[in-house]
Length: 328
Image (cartoon, rainbow, N blue to C red; front, side, top):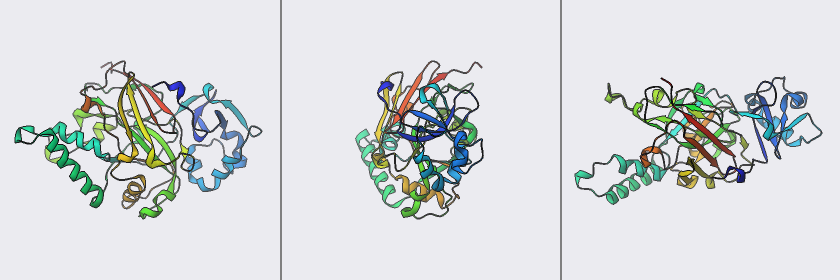
């Protein structure tokens, strides 16, 4: 993709470095406002983090909207080093949430020798997914904040691994504490949306030494830098229709993932409601919503040294992540 054609969000928050330590910033019309320089207006004490903002999001959002060129210290966004936009306490990750993705995986792992054709496997899996969407529940697991890195940082592949894969995801960022939320009130706790690439080491997903225990997401997904996040958190009222966003990931210029959020089995409200039945959501937490079809396992092409992943989600900016092979 031509990243020069991808517009910055007109209004967003994030974390950037503009000649000093990383700090919370407001992105507005291509410029960044150092929020430490307007801490008194926000009723917060410097240094301000984005999580500080989400702790009082309902109060500070109107103040953020009121800032203009006469307020505080501004710099061009192109002059800043952009970091991951927030440091969450909890990362809740939905799995198997895109219909086409699950169908493709079923075909990949099906035993065609049992007499079924590929078309039959697709049809059977599609029926299962439709039933799950109508009657079932989302599937979640937990990620670690230590896996987070910035949207333009290098990702170093873990030593001794060879099947590392990409998974572009829309992320809902929590802006108000919530527990056991009804679906109708779930979006009320969401502050905004951002981008994540939830990388996976495929050979570590299943425990060969103890197959009965199932999946091992701790080892498969939490290596340092395995969750590129950001660049920006766009408030939900500025992000557009979350049900109509397009997720696109290119590997060295070749499109691998290109799907709409319309393909989700469970939409954002359903996911947030479901996970809140178990977890008390806290300001700054991340709810990852699953990854669409087009992972490396589908294409038979996994990550290797020298690759560059470029990804975007409608209205949220883009990530560009170089891949580095481990030295050991």
